[in-house]
Image 1 (tube, one colour):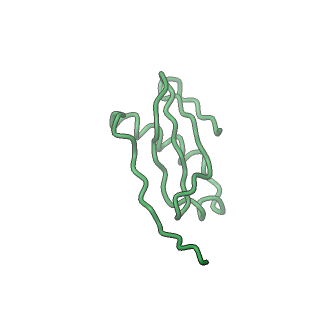
Image 2 (image 1 turned 45 degrees about the horizontal axis):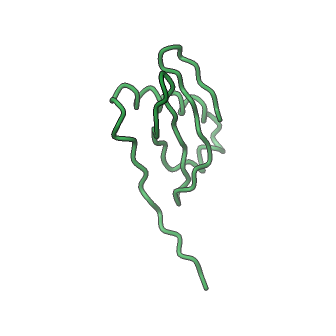
Length: 81
């Protein structure tokens, strides 16, 4: 039995403001600077917020999450989880 892999579309959380989404994406792009790593990333989506922290996930072409980044927009700190 062969598996069929279908590319999926990942969307940002609708519960976040535009500023939080932009801050989270900017933090994630700063974290994923390696060109080899960028080959695997299809999409970056801001998934949730906890207090001042915004969580951003990087996904491959088939929707597999490969990494998550925690960005504190108020302090400007970025941490890869």
